[in-house]
Amino acid sequence: MIRFETVMLAVQALRANKLRAFLTTIGVVIGSACIVLVVTVSLTGRQFIIGQIEAVGSNLIYANAVQTPGRATALSYQISLGDTAAIQETVPGVVQVAGTRSQDASVVVNGDEHPVALVGVTAGYQEIRHLLILNGRYFDPDDMMLRNKVCLITIDLAKRVFVNQNPVGQSMRLGELSFTIIGVFRERVETFGQSEIQRNTVIIPFTLMADYTGEDFVTTLYAVVSTPDQVAPATARVEQVLLGRHPPGSGFDVRNLNSILSVTEEISTALSIILLVIAAITLVISGIGIMNIMLVTVTERTREIGIRRAIGARRREILQQFLLESSLISGIGAVLGVFAGVSIPVLVRPLIPGNLRVPVPWIAVVAALAVSCLTGTFFGYLPASKAAALPPTESLRYE
Picture 1 (cartoon, rainbow, N blue to C red):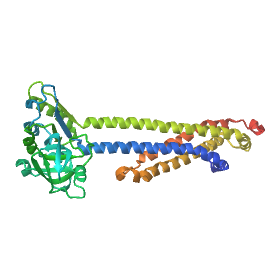
Picture 2 (spheres, one colour):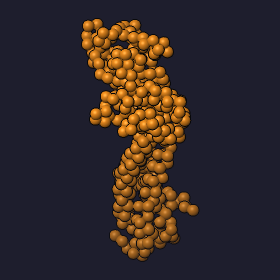
Picture 3 (spheres, rainbow, N blue to C red):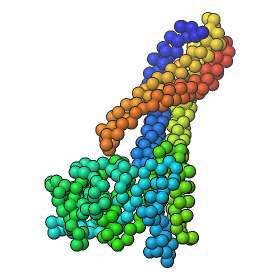
Picture 4 (tube, one colour):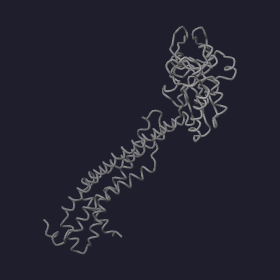
């Protein structure tokens, strides 16, 4: 047990050198704050990225025909609507299938021409790609079946073309065709132009797209399975179905988002390790600072140590006193560092786009407190043991 007298002597020694103790504590504050922030940013960033990918569709499989020179225009090598139906019927676990066909085009609105990405979509596309209808409605079965000349546009295109106007009910002309806008939409999770949905996209029924282009093949096929554990086998099965329904030499690029999730987790782990190493170096430097200051303190208080030993203090009590001093420095620094590490995410939250929440995980606080306190104890042991080993007679003669 540590005697109360030993504790009071350690506290009084720190109070007698407030500036020195404060400057030594700053290193621990920075190190522990770094640990809290590193763990917080790492875990929050990882969860955010994975959440974004899963929101796009962790159960999503997508396929494209590989464009081989000389076969790029051969319809027998392209994905057809029959392929989508076959996948829906024969691949276990598939609950929804949709296809798209996209190309660049120009539309005319009120006499002004605007470049757009024209996308024809089949039934089920909205559910698969999680499109949010902000105004108006989505295609109904009659629109698909009867090739109604209707379309939906992105919110970005609506703001750019129909300034301070409601685009629903307005018309736009594409060549000889005139479309009625029935809705405005956006992606639930931004893909930042990495899918067929661009900032200036117009989507129309696939049947109408086939009439407009004279070709009814699909450029991208989407399939959704019911559970994540079915993604890998369903991906392989989708490729088998496509290869089996097309001539020898056909090629299809069939993928899912699991590989992206795996890469994201690996990158996140690597960044976390690098940042934690930096935080650990900061703590080691602060620990060395504690050790240096405590060694100087032992030298300065050699006579005090001799007097304490002469009046009956044991070596263990001297060891405990100096260990307490270094532990108090690191402990106070750890608490202040954790407070700073917890406060920073709260203070910067208004500056984060979308007012994203950055919760501080409890493991970050525990890790910062534990590592910082252990740093002070570890680096304070050498000075403490040196103080406890001083001979009383020589210490009393020290000037």
